[in-house]
Image (cartoon, rainbow, N blue to C red; front, side, top):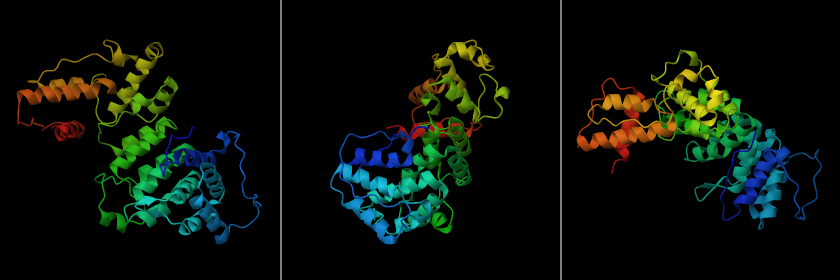
Length: 347
């Protein structure tokens, strides 16, 4: 696994602090430093984690005036056992000026690498009523994905608000368990894509729907990653070339990506039939008076071409039908959502 690239921006100290957090989360990636530092004497590993000891470490981090001092303080906070992290967070000023404090971020990220479920349950109970839950989860999620991707996958699917993809404040306050919205599952799939591609697409399938920001296949760089991602799809052998719906759209995008990266390897795969007669990036003809046929052909394109083809079809149809809306009866929910997204973006 590799750490998810992250930035904690707080008055110009981001690089040093982020490095400290990830050094704690992934000690095996730590590199020796050539900077001589005067640090407080090391405490015995057997010394109990009292409130006084944890409060002192929190104070050291929040009062540090140099990047190196912050780095050292963050590293020491990362040594707090998971059993003491809830207590440590209660001793911390969590929010200041509508932002999570540095010590809150360090402790939450550290907890997520050890026990993501417990960290998220605590954060949900603490932040769901004041609008800070999503910000807390955005700190914890990438570190959880980097350390325990399959656990995050299962947790995300279990806690997704399946009924509508969104929740109201009343629903959030009434639930003792975290509830994830559509946008949050999109983020989780992106955090997982390079840690466990299969898990990323499992989360995407559970989320359902379609977003113009769904470009996970294009972020994969090796055939090995693509093969792993395809494990998320259970009925690949039943897919029919030129006819895709639901999750098959993402599976097709992965196959197109495979062909683009290594055409020779793809030609030897069981899926070579999908691109036997045409290049994956062919340009489709726009037929503004035959919109459904045009959209059918656009849907057959790989992700890199599909979005531009759909956008072109929308523009051309709108020019010849100003102020009108197409008859969407019989359209799939995905197609309707894409069309509505384009309408919302239209000036």
